[in-house]
Every structure is written in structure tokens, then in C-alpha cells.
Image 1: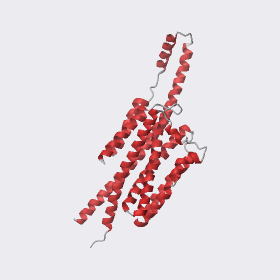
Image 2 (image 1 turned 30 degrees about the vertical axis):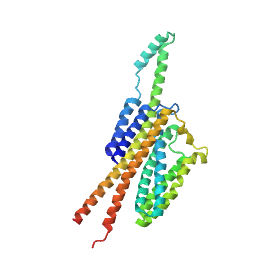
Image 3 (image 1 turned 45 degrees about the vertical axis):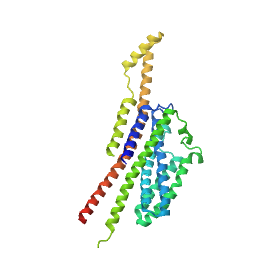
Image 4 (image 1 turned 135 degrees about the vertical axis):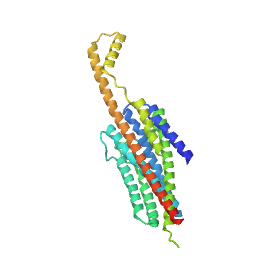
Length: 217
Length: 109
């Protein structure tokens, strides 16, 4: 854990240097385009996080191991954090680029629906007792993940949205491409690190609840 | 973790201040640069008119750049704030759990 913390911290600082000190200023949106490195990296990390939740939810339903459920919940929590970041940084960029804070265009709307579904996931987790909670949240985790491909392909499914094509991010100038790649890896590593910490905490909490609820002799 | 989050705020702030913030040009600096450029190019133009137009252009560019930097700094601050709040929340939960565990240990002993 210590190695991954040091590595993540180093990569985060390198990515910050690349964003502010190395990446060239884009010709159309100038300095504002630098939001891209955080916004798109956060959005792609959301897919990874909810992907982990999806896989662990399926695994839980098959094997019924409580630790799978805890890992699914930890990943969903971090996914929600990164989704919040994407949803908050997007409108700031949109205000400059599209002259509006919000637009009900396909990708924004489907991302908001995704966010709301995972908020629902945690409301559901807090509403039921342990056994039901695990099963219901695993089912909801699988259903909610179906929105991820919709978010990703929204620009293709519904033409005419304000978001650029999916391929735009791959056609950047090499210094911008490198900066974005480093940012993306740093965000994913931060997700792995925080999910690991959250998972350990959830495991300790579960153990405490188990000991605390055991009736005395 | 709190130190890491704080450092990720302070280091870019320093980078931002040293590399991104535009140097605001004074009217005298613009006037001197225009005079030098006219002398160097050896052209016959009204120096006062060119200076006034250049000062206006510089002011417009600087205002636009300041405006753009506000968006970039705003987005960065929002992202940092979300992470900071999340880390603080997790830290609080960790402390509460540690307290409950030590209480449990005391009860058992």
C-alpha cells in the first residue's frame, strides 16, 4: 500500500506539472481547454470504478462472499466521487465553451442519470438489513452499469449533442496526448488507492458489527 | 493523505502563479515597446495613434486571458474540494471506528 501511495502521489504531481507547465495551450479554447485533462480522466475513471462494482456484484451473486459486496460498495463510492467531479468540472468548461452551465444533451443527461442511479445504490444499501442489502445492491449495481455504455456511446446514438466525437481525445497533439495519458493513469491509481483504503475500512466496520452483535454468554 | 491533498493544491497554485498568470503590461511599457518597434522597422506612422490602439488591444487580450484563467482555476478548485471533503469524511469514519474498537476492547478487558 505504501508503494502504491508514493507512486500515485508522484504521478499526480507529474501530471499537475504536465497540465500547467508542459502541455501547450490549445488554439480554440486556449487555457480553458486544460480542464479536459481532469474532466475526461475523471469521466473515464468513473467507467473503471463502476466496472469494478459491476464485476464484484456479479461475483457476489454467484459466490455470496460478503467481501465481494464490500469491494463492490467501495468501488461504487469512489465511482460516485469521480462522477461528481466530472459533473462539476464539466459545467465550468461548458460555461466557457457552450455559453451555458448545463444543457440537456445526451451525454450530460445520461451521466446525470448514472450519478442518480448510484446515489440510489447507496440509499438502497442504507435502507435494508444486511442480507437483503447485499443482494439488492448487487442487482442494482448490475442494472445501473447498463447506463455506462449508454453514456460512452451517447454521442453516437443521439447525433447533434454538444459533446465532441469519441475519437477527439485520441487525435490530440503528442504533448497533449502524453499529458492526458499521465493524468488518466494518475486518476485511475488514485481510484485504486482510495478504493483499497475504503475497502479496508468497510471490512473493519463489518468485523466490528459482527463482534458487537454477537450475544454475550 | 491530508498532506497529499494539501500538496496537490499548493504545488499547482505555485505553478499557476509562476507560469500561467499573465504579466500585466503598463501603459508606459506598451508606449516604449511601440516607439522601439517603429524605430526598428523605420516606418512612418502616427506613434500616438499606434500606441493607443496597441494599449487597447493589450488590455482586451489581458482581460480575456484573466477570464479564461478564472474558469481553469475554478474547475481545479472544485475538483480539489471534492477530494478534500471525501478524504476528511473517510478520516472521520476511521476515527469513529477506532474509538468504537477501543471501547469494545475496554469492555472486554
